[in-house]
Image 1 (cartoon, rainbow, N blue to C red):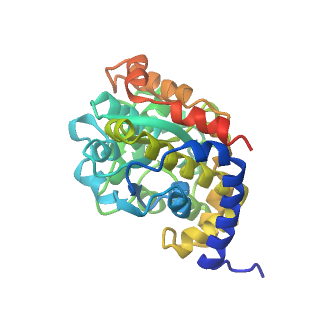
Image 2: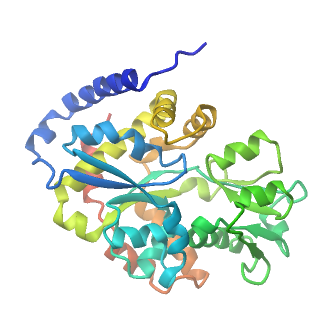
Length: 346
């Protein structure tokens, strides 16, 4: 039987691992000032792929943050869905309700296009979504005339991502697809009840549908190009936070990227911490997700390439007006990431 890791034991191990990292990076850390603010607020939702933000809690404390808050953004997705064409997390970051958050890259592009003052700092991972379809649906092209479920909590970003994917196989996302959203039922539930033909799934609902052996995967962002070549999720802060608190921005990003390394190198411990902290309900689903999602790519993949890819697709689909070049120039700052890539080479 595997040993169940207690929160105290895990944090002790994490502290020792963190100490080793601190020793390796002692010189750059010694030259840094303490964070300009001791408070940091991170977005929270039911998704498992957000794991590095939870696993980073003790690492954030080691960086000098004392008041660490997790802000539940689930209901905000409903209240602010498609407000002014933006995306809920971008809107919350813009209004100073959340300091750091991650979402699908198309979500941030929609926010940028709507004028939200968000600053993308880094890619986080790839491979956190799959498209499930009925058994008779073999490819995305087979969805012509079919029904696709969209999560009411993530309406703008999920529909935008699906529209890009459907458009790339020659279908018109407006004319060829009937979009279905239900405030009382998730797309997963509609799919399992046979009321829709396909939907976009991410952990933990992805694991639940797999476990029940309902339908099959049409597209996997882990294995299928072009999706496996780009970040699915990215991390952002507000333009004002990055300008006003540059040291805190770098320190927070370092903690989150170290946590991503831990998710990649020891998913069992990270999954146990998620469950112990109340951030995930099932250890088995969480472990499966963390073992599959590519948290090990932040040193190698170029986040600007991913933003450009999604912005181009959204621009071609007529979903944004701003050019990718304009959005990247005004809403990205890779200085912190590039410094940390040099600092955290191992």
